[in-house]
Image (cartoon, rainbow, N blue to C red; front, side, top):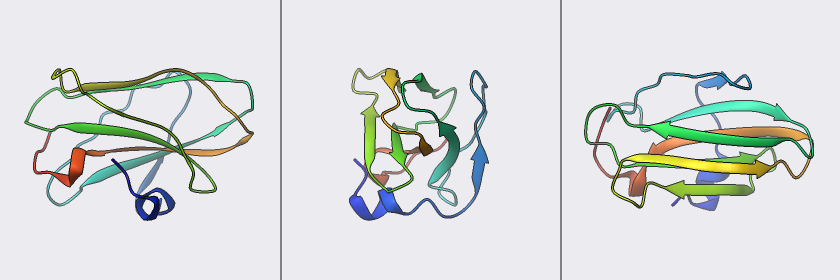
Length: 110
């Protein structure tokens, strides 16, 4: 899971995320996570999913608000190496960060 310090660290390369967009990324020993952002409006409903297409990555998916609060966090849990935050209602009109990383910062890449 993501620590409170990690939740507040949204520095580094950030990619804008448009509603309905599909983005391809890579997690590797040199890049341990990908950070995306979008400006959410209170009451909007979003779903976010990650599909590991190759490699041995055990992904974790976090949604964090502009104040560093973890809004949702999911691990694959079912052994499929895919993870999803289903239909979540945005609580406040803020910038939100989607962080895709490795569970427990364990080794693995895609």
